[in-house]
Length: 331
Ligand code: DP6
Image (tube, rainbow, N blue to C red; front, side, top):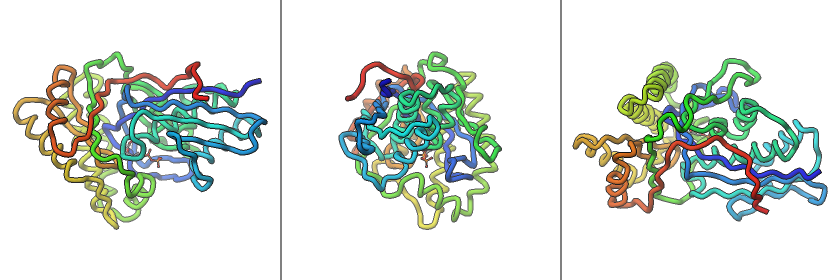
C-alpha cells in the first residue's frame, strides 16, 4: 500500500491571541484564542512513509531540515507511533509567504503536515482529533484545521483532550471581512514565539491581568463575529493585540518585535479611522502588521498601505477554507 498524501492548509491570524502555555509538552494554553483562517496564505505538504527511505528527510521551502530541529521530526514520530508504523518518512512542504516573520507559517505548516501525515499513515481522524494532534506540533496550528472564524478552547483537562479548536462560523458567514497582511521585513525574527511566550509567563508582572481579562475579549469578539459587527470585532482585536505586545515589552529581557514601519502603520491606521475609513490593526510575533477592514474599503486601504515607507508588499486575505487533502503531490 502506498503511504503518501498531500494536504493544503491556510494560515490563521488571531483576533484574540494565544500567549503562554500551561503545559509545554502537550502544548496546552493558559488562555483561549480566536482567529480568522485566511485564504491566500497557505502551505502545501506532501508526506510519504516508505521502506525505500533509509532515513527521514524533511524539505521546507527548498531547504533541508537539520537533524537538531526536533519539533517537526518529533511530530512525525508522534504520528508514526499513533499509526503503529515504522517506515522512514519524506516530507516536502512549501508556503506561499515568508516563513518565520510573524506570519503564522507554523500554523499552516503544522496543520498541513498533520493532515497529510495522518492520512499517509492510514489514520482516519475526525477534524477534532486532527486539531488536537496539530496542536501538539504548534499551538496555533490547531485552529488552521478549520476555515472561517475559529476558537481554540483552552480546555481544563491535564491530558489535553478538551484543548482543541472549533469553528465559530464558516467562511461564507462573513465574506466581506478582509485581512490585509503587510510584509515589512522578511528577516527571520530574533526570538520565536515559543521561547518568547515562556519568558513572558515566567517574568512578566502583568501576565495575571492578561488572564483575568481574556474571557471578556473572547466574549466580545465572538459576539462581533456572530453579529457581523465590524466595529465590535475590530476594536477588541486591536485592543487584545496591544495588550499582548504590552506583555511582551514588559518581559525580561524585553521582547520587542516592532520596527519603525510597524509604528508607521499603527499610527496611519488610527489616523485613517479618525478620518472615517474604518480599519484596525493586529500584530503577532514579528514586525508585520495585518490590517482588518471590509471589502468596500479594501482597495483604498491597500493603496494607502503600499504608499507607506517600509511596506514591501501586501497580501489581501479573505476568510478561507478548512485544511484539506488534495490529489496533486509535490514529489
Ligand atoms: C503571537 O502557535 O507559533 O501568533 O505553540 O509554541 O508553536 P507554539 O507557538 P505558536 O504561537 C502563536 C503566537 C501568536 C498568537 C496566536 O497565533 O494566537
